[in-house]
Amino acid sequence: MRWPRHLDWLTAGAPVHFLGIGGSGMSGLAELLAAEGYRVSGCDAVSSPVLEHLAQRGIAVTIGHNPQHAEDADLLVVTSAVRAAHPEVTAFAIRRRPIVKRAALLGLLTADYLTIAVAGTHGKSTTSGMIALALEVAGLRPGFAIGATVRDLGSTSARPSRGRFFVVEADEYDYSFLALEPYIAVVLNVDHDHPDLFPSHGSVVRAFRRFLERLRPDGVAVLSADDPVTRAFASELSAAGRRVFTFGTAADAQYRVLPDGSLKNPDGIVQPLALAVPGWHNRLNAAAAVAAGVAAGVPVPVVLQALRCFTGVGRRFEEYGVVEGVPVILDYAHHPREVAATIAAARERYPEARLWAVFQPHTYSRTQLFLDQFAQALEQADIVVVTDVYPARELPLPGVNGVALAQRIQRVPAIAVPDPDAAATTVRAAMQDGDVVLLLGAGDIWKAAVALREGERNASAR
Image (spheres, rainbow, N blue to C red):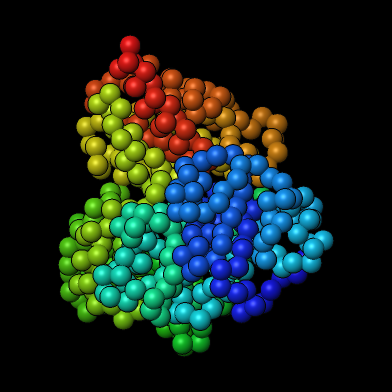
């Protein structure tokens, strides 16, 4: 394969093909290149709302994989999950045309900007969206590339920069964030995840340390004061003379979230942290956004103004609609900590509701590692429905399935079903006034929302 080190050779309007364009990171980059005038096409294995969105933006999208898809392209963009033996990759390589990974392309596209890279096991998309909106309100016209659509910035996940700043979601999977050279590096938290790549918590910590080593000499690290790993990072960087801003609930956090939810700044001023998005975790995300905004030169009042207007990003506590009087909420939660945070946010938004947690586990390795933790998190709901595992890039593991998870849940009723359609059927048969349905997972659990709405339409037609 030929891996380009820059994009100077790629002429304006050149054809670029994305293999796996429906992925959360890939779709944004496809939109970014299309907005810059490149002729973008892409393919993916199955249809999805993301592909429909891209088609509406004028990007040529094909379902299925075929070597002919990229026949006319000057550049092929692939994800970390794509193997070198993939037919489209092989055909492209034979023609000796350049192939680039998504992460490397993101690094190339942001190299000439002041990059604000938001990393962490949880909260990256939401915090990136908050920061991008704050810079937009400040008139800085940032570019951004985020793993979810930002509703307050044109319902897109990426756009070119028209100023000096570029906000990116920095993904740790496959060490993707090591392709970046951030001016502001945000680390929200460091938990063990992606066990198919990181065998231990220590291996995750080492990856994030390497990410912070990519910080520009004149850069700023924005780190959680609540996470023991990021606290250690803050001490190390401060001892080395680097600029560090901290946030969190800890007494020594520079941007401290107080028990009443207000924010105390380094100068001692306490201000309300008024948010349109629910959940304590979003108050912490907002504190990180304030710190990052200040590091970029945006005054605290301007960031707080933006946060008051911020309505969230796609599939993060996204209110899909109301079905037969019952609110249906989509959320990307696929780690026990995220599941617990989303259920807590629903309790905050709907304190009197009976909560359904419809959960689709994502990958066999993660489900196996966190089986008990998932059960404990899901028990915070009132009724649980578990589908079978969404495999993503993995092969099945013996005994790792939705039934095994449902059996671990003892404190509340738990039902195992095969897929999102079956989950929708189960929920619709038993839901009642006063319920709220949470659809949780990073796979295709969104299909349950579609099925619930179609069931309502069919009932109305009878």
